[in-house]
Image 1 (tube, rainbow, N blue to C red):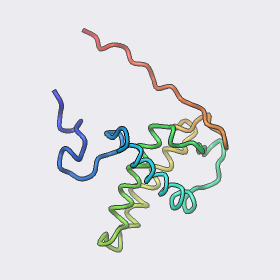
Image 2 (cartoon, rainbow, N blue to C red; image 1 turned 60 degrees about the vertical axis):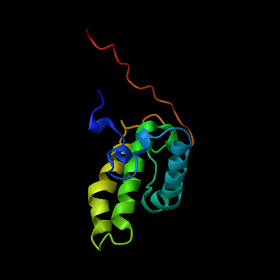
Image 3 (cartoon, helix red, strand yellow; image 1 turned 45 degrees about the vertical axis):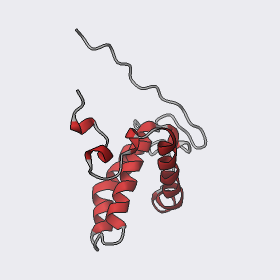
Image 4 (cartoon, rainbow, N blue to C red; image 1 turned 90 degrees about the vertical axis):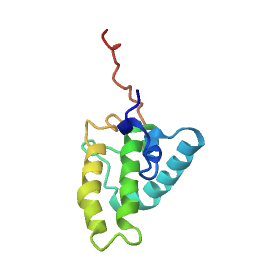
Length: 133
C-alpha cells in the first residue's frame, strides 16, 4: 500500500517532483539544471574555503544525499527569490534554508567526509537487515 507521503509531489498535485522521485532523462535534466545553479550561483557566492572541518566534494553530484539537499535548496531558492516572492524572500531563504543545508553538507561527518579537494571518495550506504517476520 502506497501512502500519499511516499508519492512524488507531482502525483499529489502539489508542484514539481523532488529529484529523489526522478529517474532516467527526467533525473538527468533535473541534475543538469541543479548543476548549473550550483556552479554559477551557489558556489561562487556561498562556497567557502574547503578545509578538513568544512569539506566539499568536487564531484558532489555523486553523493545522493548532497543532490537531494541541494535540489531542495534550489527549489526553495526559486520559490523565495523569484518574481512575486516579496522583499523578505531572500532573507527567509538564507535563514531557513541556506545556513542549515550548507552546515549539514559541510559537516566533517557529513556526506563529503573523506573527500579531499579534487578527490571523491565513494560512500557505502548503511546495510539493512531484512524486516523481521
